[in-house]
Length: 195
Image (tube, rainbow, N blue to C red; front, side, top):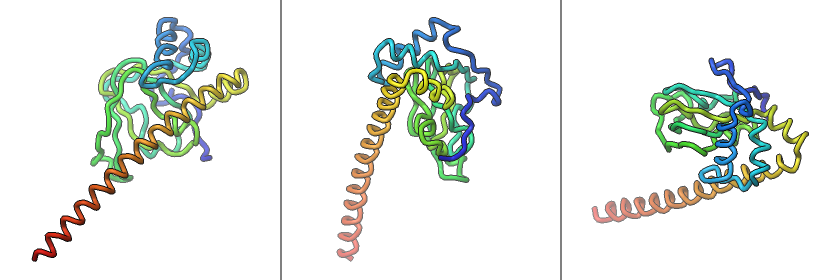
């Protein structure tokens, strides 16, 4: 695992605050952890426990929540509480050619892969509107593991399941791409043969 910054991004002008200080937002985060798109199979009590280790973050429209290829700020994941986020990807060094691959809203998890493995961010996430998130840092996850290991195990199993489902969907897309490429190659070969 790479060395990572396991704190939430206060240095970027953000001021993380304990989510427990905002009971309505804490309840919203608890609810969002239990239904689509997060759909973590956590009980109400487990979700409430996880929320107790999260921090509240506010992002202005146009702010970068996660920077693609970032190797330093990988030690946290975000649960979108409100607002919309654009998810983009590009080749390293070609950020101006970024392609938007989705737009996500309340209940979406961002950055969970880097939280788990400490590897560089795989996409860039930008606020389309003002966005409020609950962030779980690596330090928060470590405290959760020490203080509530069964809840942490259930959370990690659910996050792993989300990642596995995304990988399966990507495999399906790659299979379709391979079929389309083969079909196009057959058509090119047919046209070449005709002269």
